[in-house]
Image (tube, rainbow, N blue to C red; front, side):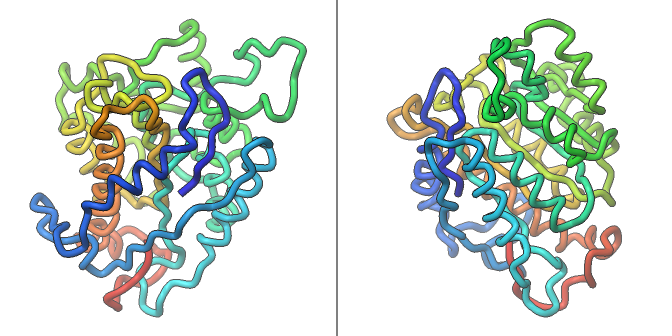
Length: 320
């Protein structure tokens, strides 16, 4: 878990990992059978571990990103058991603000030696150029990267695979249509939140699948503000009109057909959450669904047909 916060108006994402970990306490190993998928992801072939927190300095965002990247590389190069279908572990990060995805993408490219596709669930596109923010002549290394510029920066560093990039659930405000033009130039497909009404869940799933493709390593990034504030009030940049938690989980079923090499759930801000911690519970359940889909990808045979990273599963335990 990454208790990091790189700045926005509604502060407090640094406390998100604690809240999600607390909410996940009800996900007992013996009571986590997924009735839709017909297996328990914690009692299947995979070995699911809580790797704890990566310690990061709270007052130097540039150094914090470097610390995260080193921590991610160390985890991703951890040896997997003999016979594992995966050469490298899969990480599900719990943030923290959205800036944590940049060091993760850097680490993945270091380990895999190639860029990856991206499936990004968010109310916002997060491909803003740093100069689109009101920093004027006061430029600094720290001002280059924040929760709204991460995928612009990732594209400049060639961490992402153009043409295999999807924003899903977009419904946030923008500065001008130029924001979308810039996003187009980076190779992203945008799926607006309204498409669930106009086209339906199945059409959205097929859009995602056909754009990313089954044989491409894909990173999944989920900003909790893709959900309507009725379902996730505890976040830094809430936007009304988002998807329900049920709709998001339905769309996430596409992940059982994609080669997911890592994921994150970010922007949970407990200070703005409901008394009962609804946002934290939603994030914890989304993490459970992510893990379930990654396990299902191997169980359904997609791995052995489409991936050449290592031989198909031959041992009962591996790592996420």
